[in-house]
Image (tube, rainbow, N blue to C red; front, side, top):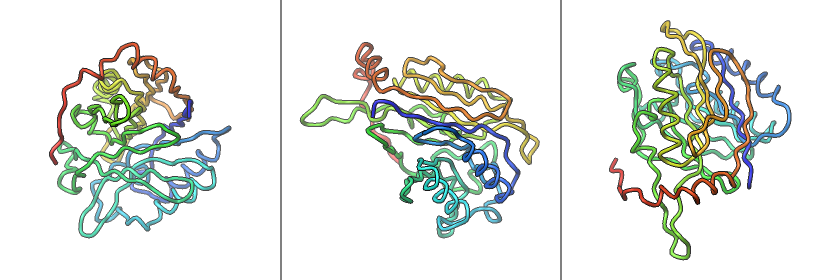
Length: 268
């Protein structure tokens, strides 16, 4: 697939109110005009960045996951975003990649945000997840993961019958990143695109959360050369960006920096 359409929804969230958030996102998703391949929602889109998973987490058979399945089928899209999920006796900040046929991928946030006490309530994930659609390979990440470049670092995947190639083409990071550190967010998103020669899509929320922290959004789409294709600050907005495989291949072909990367192994 030469072109991949990504729709980002930057919005305020109703604090720890699943029903209100799902109703709000239903309206926003149904308002999207034209075709799009992937719709991306912020981190913990059903509750906000809650540290009360005992009260607000759900299982993979819960209301918000079922809602994702319904909306993906209705709009014939991949619906992506993270939820507070209970599995056994543990809680995870889980990125769910919901396909229109009801199948799903999932990635558990590796780096729990210690400054906000996330590590006291949620268990960290242990593996990276690369999703795919139409030949595009997509690295799923959540908020604080952005600060750890090794976790996002491109690895070449040798094929015995072909030249080595980069591991993925796009990073999607969903977040509840506060305004007071928005400079870090914007800078690191660009850095991940440049160093990995990958498209990057960052989707953040706006508004005050239940802890009194303000969020300026600053959702962005960045090309593999680090150029900003889309940026929205301090307001609610739905945007669709079209990513081009030919542009990705042109940049990687002309500037083959990825070939000179150091081999490494991530040990969980």
